[in-house]
Image (tube, rainbow, N blue to C red; front, top):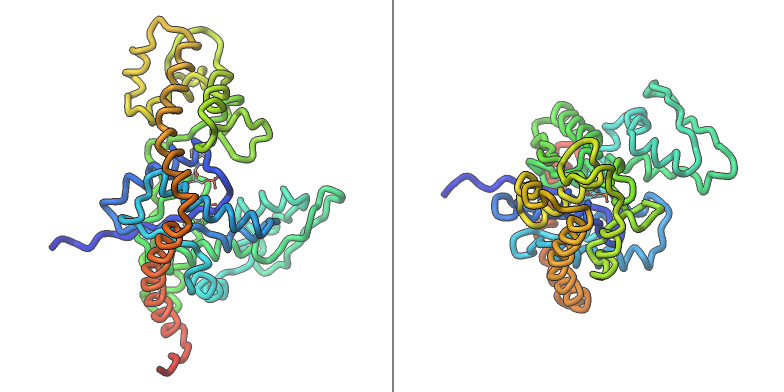
Length: 357
Ligand code: AMP
Ligand code: TRP
């Protein structure tokens, strides 16, 4: 018998339909790790309530995300797929970790500051960790007050990871700072009590597949883009996918090659390459002497062909509530078993009296 498999854990918010960026930059990579690691994939509904939301949509999006992940290749036989709120322990561990976290560290988180700014507030840049939260209200743009959950978001994320004593966490580079906090908290806990947590490694993809907007290829393809023709969704109808790709912004000149001054063409080549498995160099050779129209046409064919089985599988899954529930039950059971062991250990070390049986 070899070494036990290392544990990887990653989570995502149930934000609706995945984009081609989510698929190529995240989910496809997770799927490629299935055989080599013990995998836990969580849909974090408790994180999703830190900003304004509609309960019925949260419920719908959470199930839809699970179905999309399975359709994209996260095989539930090889991975534990679970919903965060189904496992007791995430919020409990977050509470404990929050008592090891100075408020100032949370106030300095980039994502927190960005979200606060989106709400129409200005966060003070006060570096004093003992200072009070100071926010100046910039008037009519403010939609609601800043809740403590938004500030606590990274602590809950640290709990998601440490509850499974994960060895590694695949995330996009935007989550690097949160993962750093998680590692600090694990070290702080180990130091304050005794050695308990493995310090989790970030798994940030080397190739850095970053899929760019079809309309403004200098910025990332994103769900929240005001111009929806810039974003490919994995569940877009084939006609819609084609239309968006055919109207993608290309660059001056006519040569089809990967280059910094050709962000539009490079992005299309990248999407083709990741989906077809053809290297960018081979693609450049293949398109020699052809125009942008031919490139777009072929990228559209490749995207539509790659999404066809994903979409077919998704429509089966979303109708099969019984199957989704059985996947979620198995996932939650496996996650809960591991989480319970870890939480009991942590509670003992923290000085909580064990519950008599
Ligand atoms: P988000 O939807 O922004 O929460 O991202 C979920 C995951 O998808 C993260 O791992 C991101 O890094 C990844 N991701 C989102 N958009 C893109 C993109 N345009 N290109 C590559 N990866 C992306
Ligand atoms: N904050 C992550 C994001 O927005 C989602 C997340 C929550 C997460 N808990 C996690 C990612 C634990 C990895 C591990 O993408």
